[in-house]
Length: 130
Image (cartoon, rainbow, N blue to C red; front, side):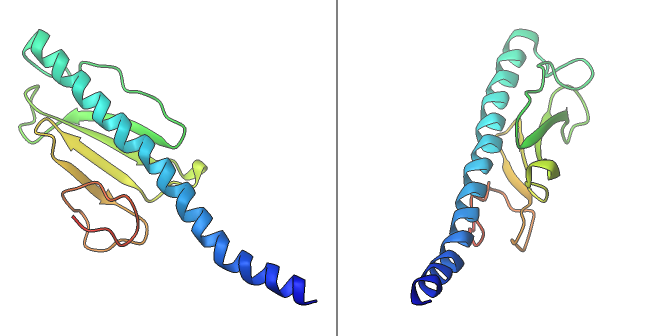
């Protein structure tokens, strides 16, 4: 009986830490893919002097945990863009959204358990600040 109690206590402590670790590892997909795609957008701009004719000049990547979209930025023209990574609910990542624009302004617009959003950085874990 004592062994069962000890295992129960360890599980109660370890499981939340494990799920937090899994979530943080999945967030790396979003921030890494946004960074790579932003560089691809800048390369496109160097070749074409715009970020795309209708929205974005490069194909959006696919991910296991996030969907990626691109649109024109603040200028509402092909001289700016905003890349967005939105967590997939089917992968238990609903509630997480990150963006980056042509000026490399990284923003967290949705983050489960965080307050004061949006913030001008990519949060990596609950309780982080910019």
